[in-house]
Length: 365
Image (cartoon, rainbow, N blue to C red; front, side, top):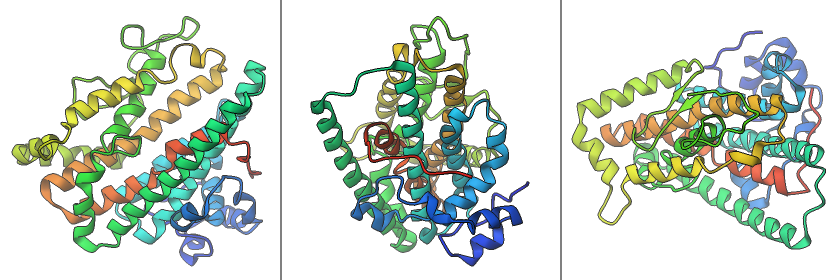
């Protein structure tokens, strides 16, 4: 089956959604969409800004089915689905075919698939480790962190949705705040951190912490503290990312002073090159060494591949943010804020799946 990336994926019950799908996908949407709701914890404040859309999830599951059939192992189904989905939905945003009213349900779809990826890994870790249950104190600490995570996601979604509702200037006005977001949703921090996570798994010291039983995979992803805003992959880059790389180069070349002004920020703000360096180094300390010792080869290789795919949208987010701020282009700003909104729950969702026992896997087609 072939699908057009430019198709607008709307919320549950949308005629546009049904029209965009093949007969097989429409049948999947109509065959009990509720099975994809309620399996990912969603507090009331977060639900207001990140509403569940089981029909959207059904459509994406149907579209992913041919890729899922080719996975090396079904133990990486949700890992693969999550990475595939970020690329799929980021591409639609960066192509300009997504509206502000659609991004909330799409952000929920990514958050939910991240939760399910976390649950999948939690179950696999229990099988691989045969570890005793966590002490009560650790469970309580995890619960407190998860409650804060839900509140943080709700606040971040609200900030971004308000900017999108603010007309042509709303998104331009919020970008100086977003670009210095020192977390996985930051346009600079997000791409740098996530790419660094891939490097630590595959490169030898002093760059990475590759384990002896893992084959060398040099430059699976290339990123370092020296080359600001540069990431290279050994996977083919999607067209939307190539387009925004070109737009970024045009903007920087056309107005280098504005580019440097964005990087410096206002007096007292952190230079973005320093933020980049910290984010890369943080990534190089995460999921390396013994942390992946007991992963199966299928899970390890799947994590490398799909986390690299996930980074495509993160990189496009960072590039579009710079383009918008350098050129003061409201349409580039709108797309930058939309894709940033899309990723609000992408990384926190994994923590929910790993630590919240109320998070469960849904049934799937």
